[in-house]
Image (tube, rainbow, N blue to C red; front, side, top):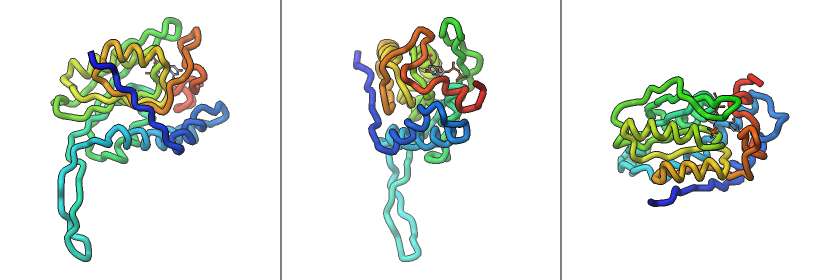
Length: 210
Ligand code: PRP
Ligand code: URA
């Protein structure tokens, strides 16, 4: 089995936004902006190998050759925290089709259960971006990736903002073909299965539900 490829996106602007997200003093409005900012950079990196389509456009001074991003892109936020990364994808790829997967970790057991799924058809020929900022135990990621695979997705990239070693290992075991894009792999999970140092509960900080 091919090992999962983890792409560490190490850009100064990525780290700048990550510090804002980690800071406990960051309020939801600034948190949302930083989430979009970091996501733009992560998504751009994850789509670096999009198949280009050669085109010619007319500038005011004459024809200019160029390249359009030719591939079909499907983005799938894992609700609810993944919604904080969606605007970034749609800004970069306005034509992207959007699926949704709803998963919720149980507060006591940290086991994720599914409450919603609506995916576009014909995923087989698409670049599928699964966006979920936190990869902790990996339970949610594996459940979402199972659904995407059952729906026919073959080229899948997972974009997250903070990953834990345990989550990376679980994805590697269950979905070795999936590439993970993340700025950082943090130290560990705590007893409540939160990432340490992490940034806390992403969904709660994004929506001010703490
Ligand atoms: C968070 C996060 C991931 C999951 C990661 O969602 O957005 O989906 O936890 O944890 P895991 O790797 O241990 O499964 P949560 O279940 O808290 O739901 P929310 O996005 O609605 O807040
Ligand atoms: N979900 C979060 O939002 N944060 C964590 O640290 C783990 C799971």
